[in-house]
Image (cartoon, rainbow, N blue to C red; front, side, top):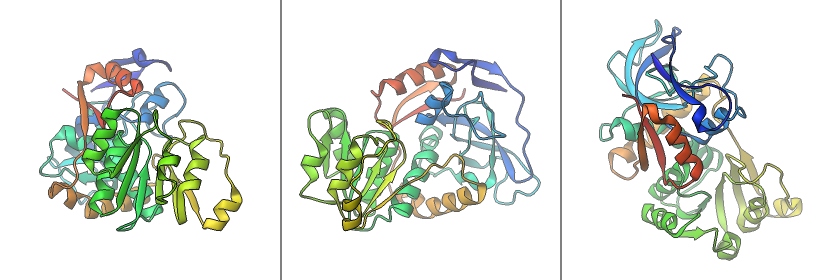
Amino acid sequence: MRAAIITQPGGPEVLQIAERPLPKIKADEILIKVEAAGLNGADIAQRKGKYPAPPGTPQDILGMEVSGYVYECGASVRNWKPGDRVCALIPGGGYAEYVQAHEGSCMPMPGNLNFVETAGLPEAVLTVWHNVFQRGQLKKGERFLVHGGSSGIGTTAIQLARAFKSVVFSTAGSPEKCMVCTGLGADIAINYKEQDFEDVLKNTKVDVILDMVGGDYTPKNIAILNNDGRLVFINSKKGSEMNADILQIMQKRLTITGSTLRNRDNDFKKALASEAVEHVWPLIEQGLFKPIIYQTFPFNEAAEAHKLMESSKHIGKIILKIE
C-alpha cells in the first residue's frame, strides 16, 4: 500500500509517499480501506519528533482519524462486516491506503455525510464528548467557554454545547474566525488579539472552560469561573506551567482536570465511541451538528496540508483524500 511517511523529524517537507506492507490485523481488529484522513495538532508534533506514537503503532505514518470501508475483519469481530462504511479513532497510521483499527474504536458513517466530512469526526467529537460532557459535566443552561473556537475541536465544541442548550462563549484570533464562531452558535466570540477574554467575561462567570492554550490563560480562566466551575485542559500551546491562586480554587470549589485520548486502552475508547454514537450521531442526522471542513488535499499533498495547518489560517478541519 501507499502511505505518507515521515522520512526524518522536521518540517512539512519530510512527508513523502512510500510503499509499506499491508497491516496485519488481530482477532479484534478490522482493516479499513481509507477514503479520507483528518489532520490534527498531534500529527504536527509527531512529525517534528516531539510526540511518538504508542508502542505497536507505525512511528513513521501519521494520522489518528480516518473514514473508509471495512476491507477485512478479524476472527472475533462481530459488529462489522466487509463493505461497511465506518470512521475510526486510531493511535496512528491513518495517512495510508489501509489502516488497522480496534473494532471498538470504529463508528458507523452517518448517512447524511460523505467520507471527507466523516473523517473530521472521530478525534474532535470524542475529545469534546469526553472533556466537555464527561469530565466537564456541562449541563443544559450552563455557561461554556472554548478557547480556539475556530479550530476543529472548537467548532465541534460550539455546535455540541449549543445543541445541548448551553450558553456558549469562544475566543478566536480574527474577526472572520469570530464570525464563524457566532454563526455556529456562540453567543459571544472574543477576538483575543483585540480584547482580553477575562475583561469581557468577568461579570458573567463561566461554568465550564475547555482550554487548549494554557500558560497565562490559566489564572484568567480561574478568575472567570463560577463557583463549582470546571476547567478542562486538552493542550498547552502557551506553556504547561501553571500559575494558580490555590485559595481562589478552594473558595470557588473548582475542578481542574484534563486528558489525552491517544494512549487510552481499547475498552475506554470502545465505551467512549459507543456513547458518542448514542448522543452525537442523532444530532448529525437531525442537522444540528456537522463537521466544518476548511480544505481537502490529495493524499500526495500531505506536506502542503501540514503547511496550512501550521499557518493557523484554517477554520475547522483539514482533510487528506486518499485517491
